[in-house]
Amino acid sequence: MLCPTIQTDRLTIRRYKESDIDMQYEFLQDERLHKYISPPKLSKDEEFDVIKKWIADSDTSNYERWVIALKNTDEPIGNISVNGIDKKNNYCNVGYVILFDYQGNGYATEALKAISDYLLTQRNYHLVECSCNELNVAFAKVMLNAGFTKDGYIRNRRKNPDGSYSGVEYYSKSL
Image 1 (cartoon, one colour):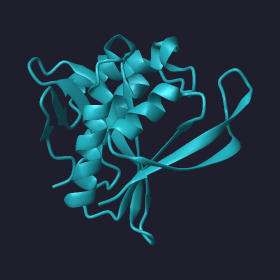
Image 2: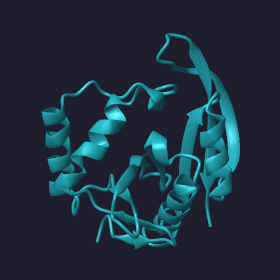
Image 3: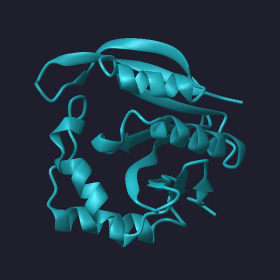
């Protein structure tokens, strides 16, 4: 089964539900979360259509997508997903976002560790990869705390929302 529910001490990492639209749309609208990335400019209806497609594809798409929710309330606070798969070399790329008001509590580390462990042990990937803008020190710290190792750096790889360019740091985790 793809996108199984995964429980951690404080989180439930689960499939999307239609009721998650407000959390997902908040991410698209909150400029505080767009310092290092430029999310798509979608209306709430367009984003709702995207979520409905993700729900419909949950059992067939290898690009697994989960909501990160607080365990005790099921309140959605972010998402985590497989963004890229290299079948030939048996690895995948994972990305995540935590709503601004929930950052700094270790939720991202907890979710990334749980999902990367699942991808390595249950989906049998050889390696799980993450990358981040070199300026995003907090993201890099999350990856290191989740058991990833810094593999490298490529300069001027990503265009920032302000038009400048930054390098990208690459991290990976394997068994």
